[in-house]
Image 1: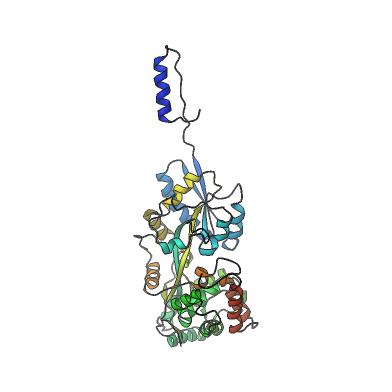
Image 2: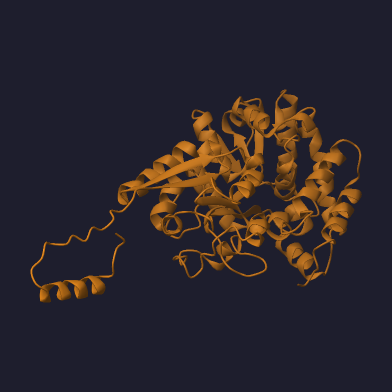
Length: 423
């Protein structure tokens, strides 16, 4: 028998008391059923850490089991889009930020969460990354912000008498010294070219003007043919001499292996790498420095960052209420602290404190001089995306098939297909 409202039950009991004595009638109520919630992610390297985190939730919520299911990051978007269309998909999904979640919003596959769960721990800037472009609804609880700049091997630096560079000339001198000692100065992948847009901003954001250039691009005061933006792309052409040989064939995993094997002195990457370094190179002494501003820069040295993503609820989940409760918990300080301690990433939730000194330093550097990851934050809402245009252009440039001016022109022409400044 289905559960009856208390008032209905009371009324029935009163009626029964007024009737002649008859055999007792039992009103059986269903017991709460156990629920398994699946959480999909693109972070295969975080599986053990997330299982530790979700153990805490399961202990506080008897009858709920959280199953973390990660996929290879390069395949994740397509797998998620397919999984959300029917049975067998996740209850909770890790969502790409900004324009990355827009196709799922337009397909009606995600549940709007504003007004449904408590999101008060997040700033408007953090929630922007999980907000639908057309309807302004919030579809996820942000899980991390990322910053990127230069990791370096302290042991190699000490052995070669090198110090963290504070000027561009010192930076170039460090790169030359590493090369002269048969080391890869900067381990950067070319095969998985999504990293190219990250390295471009890490090196070139001060050159093109950082936050001021972002504002001018969005307003229409300039475009990507701007000579200062072209100059930032030229820096990537100059940088190629310091990258792994045949860089176009070097994968992301290869580039990280070069750094872990101490065959490379520097790795330009994000704070999201720290957990990987700790797990796979626990004895490696790693430091971090802010890449100095290049000559003729329009802005000071900076650290580039963005809100990495969020966790949302599958609109077709069979356990909507339980999924909402889990995502709401993922917006609490308890989850945020567990996240930053176990995943080794920076939580956007106030009151969370990194216990890893390298992660804490990343957070401090970003807080001192933050700059937006230009293309991801602003030009990822439709196709072609800004970062895909840029990285494909840099690939062509490294192959000798395009000039910096042509790369910038292709970025501008591609974005003109859907982006209108000032809107």
